[in-house]
Amino acid sequence: MLNLGDYTKPDYAVKSFIMAGGERYCLLVDSKSGLPLFYPNLYITTQVRNRSLSYSAMESALVGISVLLRFMLERNVSLEDRFKKGLFLDLNEIDSLRDYCQKKFRPAVIDQSIIKLISAKKYKEEKNGRVSSQTEYRRLTVIADYIEWLALYLSESNRNIEQRKLIDKMVKAIKARRPVRKNRNQTLNDRGLSKEQLELLFELFRPESDLNPFADKSVRIRNRLIFLMLIHLGLRGGELLNIRIRDIDFASGQLVVARRADEKDDPRTDQPLVKTLDRRLPIKESLVREIHDYILKERRFIPNAKKHDFLFVTHKQGSTCGQPISKSTYNKIMQVVRGVSPVLYGFTGHKLRHVWNERFSDLMDQMNTPPDEARQEQVRSYLMGWREGSGTAATYNKRFIRRKSEQVALEMQDRQVRLPKEETVEKQSN
Image 1 (cartoon, rainbow, N blue to C red):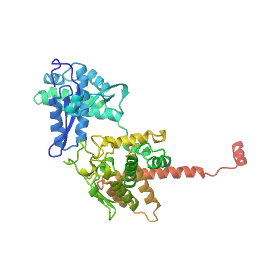
Image 2: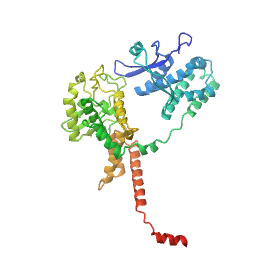
Image 3: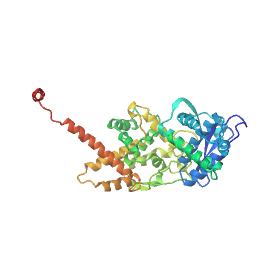
Image 4: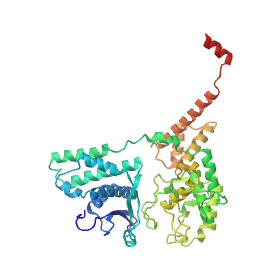
């Protein structure tokens, strides 16, 4: 870490880049000098990258570490100096660190020369803002792991058992202050979309609709296709953004969903990834026709789009025009749609994947002779790209059973036989 007395206090930013071999990588740098920070980047290389974790995992870890460094910087404390002397964080400092990790940070304006130098994400405190419990949990987890590694690396704990005990105590104290994680299965209750929400979405994405929030006609057509592929195929956002024209067999009506990490010809530093297994999905004729029309009537006229074969491209004029759309652009589309009506509060593209699973469960339930539960799990797992036996498909089956149980219980209540008023009065008098 840089000497605090060398010059004005530094701030931190994540520098992202693509290596010659196509690997996505990032570093934590001093945003004033552009110099990489030694220990955080050594940690990322040895403890995160070398475990074959994704670029997103590396970036998330560096953002968490930057929160820790800023916390220490505001107190004029050098973690490295403390740990070398065998001095570790006390409980008061850990409590303050926990409170600091609850603060919300937002992108800040950076000097243009710095932007060109590092293409950085920089954060500054947004007063009175608090992050979600999930973000706080993630920050404290990253910080605990980094502090443990740094303390063991710099101290004499390999020779001093007492120091090792102090480090373990410090790390446990940090992790103990993480917010309680709620059972994920309970959150599945409200993950789908109501009939009202779906009807509104179909109208909002219709290119001719007056409610469509996008001005450009070609953007409307592209966004409708994005919506249709998400809801009909149950794709993740990363899978959608990875689709190439070569993946589509127009004659047989099939789409190959393929994993392509660290592709050299993908210009996106934060490359969208396919987290699930490779698979081949059937596409109905009307959807094939819409894909074909978008390619021939819209995409082909976008400047620079012919330089690659990613299906969805940026239509807006500028330096990224014609490039594959980024994750941030995809999220922006969903954000704009979500902002049209309070009815769509909480809507994300991933909600449509849950809608697909609900429809799958309904279809299985309506069949005269539906496959047994094990077979349904196999089919669902393949279409979703889940590893067979992972248990994810079973979770959706349980959710469907729970929803059906609720419907039966309410129907029973509606059909409950009521006693005539005279008989009720007579019984009460007795």
